[in-house]
Amino acid sequence: MTGQGQAGPDAAARPGTAKPPEQTVYLNGEFMPLSEARVPVLDRGFVFGDGVYEVVPVYRGVPFRWSQHLSRLARSLAKVRIDNPLDDAGWTGLVAELLSRHPWQDQFVYLQVTRGVARRDHLFPADVQPTVFAMSNEFKPVLRQAIEQGIAAVSLPDERWLHCDIKSISLLGNVLARQAAADAGAMECLLFRDGYLTEGSASNIWVVKDGRLLAPPRDALILEGIRYGLLEELAGSRGVPFDIRRISRDEVMGADELMATSATKEILPITLLDGRAVGDGPGPIYRKLFDAYQDAKVASAAKGWVRP
Image 1 (tube, rainbow, N blue to C red):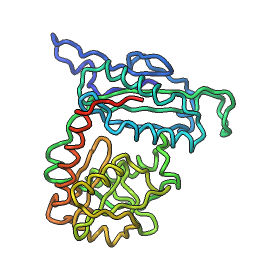
Image 2: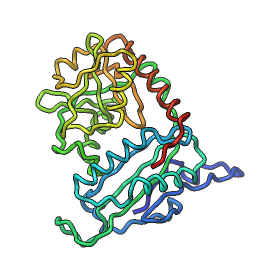
Image 3: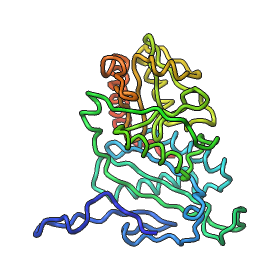
């Protein structure tokens, strides 16, 4: 398999302009140009989706909430019974080197570990080394229009498996949900299981009612996003009451505000759900939390990278 970068094709470059340096990736102990990265077709990540991943935002060269990302990666690996191929210092060194090979101050790092290469068989293979892949892309600012006007979402049934707490590369359910949202002209979807909110296709979802911030329970039905703990902290710092509990579909449809969070979205207001307006646009709780989020980014960058 050959990776595909975000940059446009060579043919799009104007004659006489310098070609930008090629993206560097890490694969199984080596740094190399993206175009040279190859994974055997019998890698279990390719044939089974047998692996886990992380996405880490980096602001001014400092990974944001790095220790929390390392902890979640370790949890996901343990739950699927893949030995962690690196200790915390090893992951930190890998990411530090990867960041240094790209010119951007703000980046987002993708880390992926699969069970490795073996003859195709559902059983775990013995004595196989995990495949470790990492890449980094420029983190471009979230669109101002989305921050100021909000995004559209649709509601969908949550038809995924029952281990959503694992950050698995097996994302077909999420892919189908995200495409359904796009087909409806929306940026995200809100998923419901048995009448209760779980999460979005690629984000955690937050509900505001009567000045209180509500979040679904931390359980196997959602991926506990790194921003989950962050928003709990930010809500406390800004005096916003915070409850973790089951949230019914009726409560979501009658919410004063809705928000989505993820590593790349940061925090965005949902102002249209199933074609109906949510509140009166981005609300006061969103604005408090958005400002607090930006302050947290600045503080993290100023503190620097505390490495294990």
